[in-house]
Length: 120
Image 1 (spheres, helix red, strand yellow):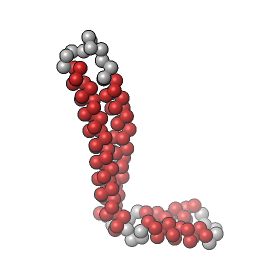
Image 2 (cartoon, one colour):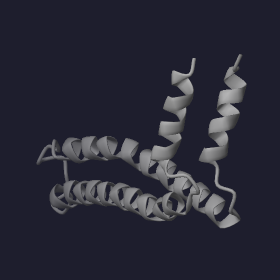
Image 3 (cartoon, one colour):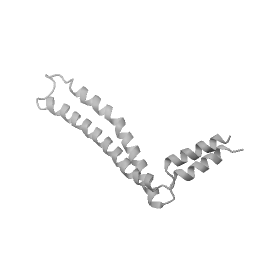
Image 4 (cartoon, one colour):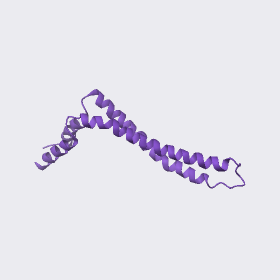
């Protein structure tokens, strides 16, 4: 009888590359993924501050602050969105080499898993 540990060990052989450079690419790709997700979490918060900064009373704000604060918040929102997209694109570019250099394409692992599962 096959245990979960046996199945995980078999699949882990296909998931983690043997080459040291490919392992480094996987780690860089994972760190870019985490960075992109952290920035994506910040995007709605920055947008909230941008919208809230538009609700300044004309009497209470200095003349230059009427334009500067909302403009800075909107620029921050754009930078956050662009940075998140940049991290995602860099992750894809770094990880493409890992996928092309793997000994088994992802489809082969899926097919082997399906064949193995059908023998039960």
